[in-house]
Length: 340
Ligand code: DAH
Image 1 (cartoon, protein in one colour):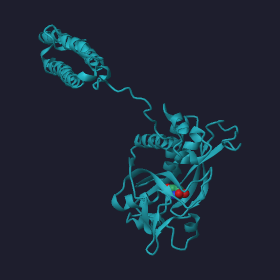
Image 2 (spheres, protein in one colour):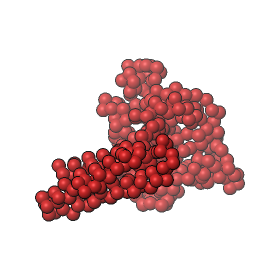
Image 3 (cartoon, helix red, strand yellow):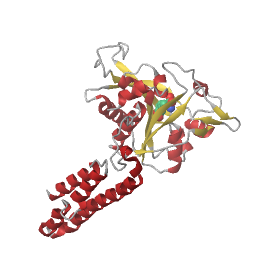
Image 4 (cartoon, helix red, strand yellow):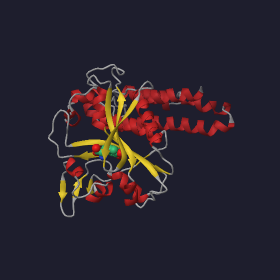
């Protein structure tokens, strides 16, 4: 009760509009004069329980100090401005914040995914965007002349030895496994690059999120349950998942993850192209060779990995039909996320 009184007076002081000598004097009388409103609060100290006295006293002192500072500052400003009374500006007033800005849809999706996975014990990991051939390709089972390497149209910063702009966040898998002993549970969001022609569907700069779980006895069932958890957290508890066999050089077996269409619930619509399913990422059991490349005993440990594109996720979730909107900084686009 008493505390509320103090807070109210504090807000009153902060918002007290002083425009001239007269209002400044009124302010002084009210908060610093011989019969000022803070006096009652000081008198009330004797009724406050002992254990709260200190905190209470500090609070009123802080409010008193606020009033003193505001008064001193405005008095000085007023003296300096005497010649120009009309243009007196109270610089202590709180600023009314306009156009505060909004989170970018990629940020919203990234934060949502990090929250979902931190609830089940995953930690955020990072890796460099400028990467050596080893971390981006070779350690992941993509050898020099493997066709999978031309699957990825890569930006080379330097050749021989090759240094590239990472084509996926899978490099973080290697960097983490090299430096940590299992159990490993990480989520790695980040920016990725591919030498793509820019269109409504593809961009040469985009974002991915990588998941990696390594421990004793991790199985495909764990992967499936984790992906079901992800799908239901993202799109609601009715959501179903489907794993389609696929191929990635760093996982065996590999799968593509589909979720039941969160727009039509599976009956067929334009978003799922009338199939009832929407593809959201790639996954699989980490290939034992990849574990060995990171000096992890593949007889003892197994694990799974998962990767997905954030732009694609944001486009599905917010029904955005052109990926270029994500990087054009058009206010009309960005403003739509203000209250998300
Ligand atoms: N790195 C793959 C890509 O960019 C995505 C991916 C697939 C990541 C399977 C994974 C995975 O971790 O297990 O297309």
